[in-house]
Image (cartoon, rainbow, N blue to C red; front, side):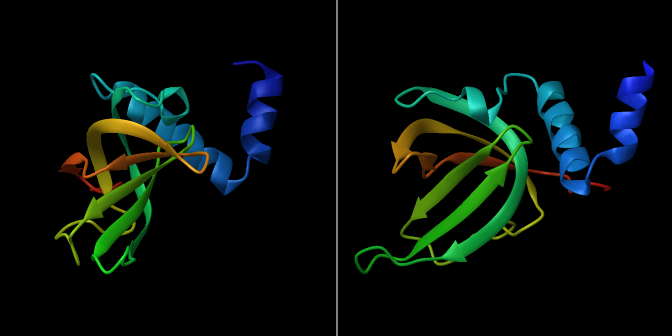
Length: 122
């Protein structure tokens, strides 16, 4: 490791260190790709940490929405017809799979298949 890399590591913010950890964890997950490499209208599988989870009704239908972060970017997850989902909460690590859509410039998967993973530090 060069002096420049060591110096950069010392000065990195907590967010930058978190992003590096998430990218490394995602790279170790077989079959997963980085969020920033997801293409609309293609199936994708990613792993990351849920940053937020909210109940947001859409046209009278209950909807659980979450933001997944993998260190390279964020992916919106939307489960239609649900008021809550056991285990889907901020700070939880997930592996998700589904058809990627572009919704107002944001990568989104509706009703993704998901697998709960161990929380960081567990």
